[in-house]
Image 1 (cartoon, rainbow, N blue to C red):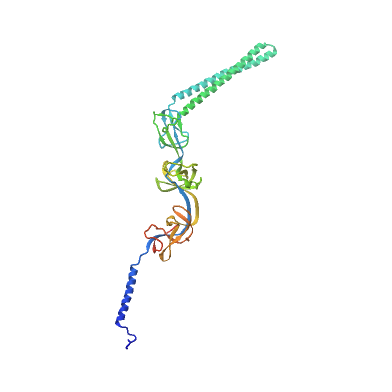
Image 2: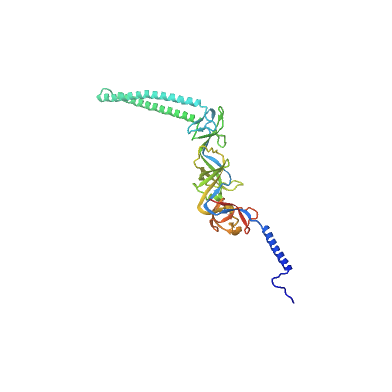
Length: 393
C-alpha cells in the first residue's frame, strides 16, 4: 500500500477548496448587498420643560363687548335730529338723536312764565301780609294804652292772619309752577336719546323724518341706536359640562381668532355661568366668559368675531416631558436603542394636554424616542436611523 507524500495536495482537493472559498465570499457578498436598510424616522430627545393642563371650548365662541346698549327713546315720535353716524365714537351723556318736541318745549316756556308770575304775586301778597302784621302789632300797643277798642284789635289781627295765609298760598303756587317745569323737562328728556357710556355707534335704525317707537310688550322692534363700548371685550364660549368643574374665575386663558391668524391673545376667566345649557341635539355645555387683557388701540378687534379659548387650570414647571404624539396606546413609546434597534418602553404619565405629556417614570432625560409613529413599518424590533433630531428647548 502506497501513501501520498507529506506537503503535497492533489489538484482535485485544491479546486474543491477554492470553490468552497468562492462560495462563502459570494454568499457573504449577497447577504451584505441584499440586507435591509435602516428605516429613517424622526427622533425626539427627552428633555425638561413646563406642562399645562387646559380645557377648550366645544364650539366656536364669540367676541362680545362688556357693555352694549340697544336703545330707543322711551316715547314715540318723529326723528327731528340725528346727531351721530355709524362708526362714530361718542362720549357719555352726548345727545344721539331727538324726536319732535316743540309742543313740550312750549309747555316748558309756559311753565317758566307762570313761575315768574307766581314769584311776583308772592312778593305782592307777602308784602301786604307783612304790613298787616305790623298793623296788628301797633293795634295791640294802642289797645294796651286804651286808645282803641278790642273790636278794632281783633279786626287788625284777623287781617294779618288772612294776609299771611294768602302769602303761604302764593308760595304754593311757586311750587306748582316748578313742578310744571319739571314735568315739561321730563317729557323733553323722553324725546332725547343720550349715550349712557363712552362707545362707538354700531348701528342706526331710522332716518330724519321717520317715526321711532318703543317696543310694545312682547313685540321686538329694531333699536334706534346700537351702542358698543369697544374699550372692553371678552369671549363667550361653551365649555363641556365635564370640564366645567375644573374652572374658576381668575384663571388664565389664551384666545385665538379665526380672523387674525397666527396671533394669540391673553385673558382671564371673568364669569362662569351658574347653569348648564341643555340644547337639543347638542352636548350639554356651560357658558364661560374670558376677558381680554389690556388691548392696544390699533388691535381693531370687532365685536362678533368667532374665537376659541384655551383655559389653563393646572401647570407643572421643569418636569420631564414628551410630545403627546409620541405616545402609543397604553402609554407606550418606541425607544431608540443600541445599534438603532427600536425598543418598546412603558411610561407613566402625569399632567398632559394636546401638545405635551409629563413623564413620571419609564424614561430619562436624554433618551431618544420616535415621533413619526404614523410611518409605515415603524414598530419595535426594527433597525432605524435618525431622519431629523428634535430637542425641546
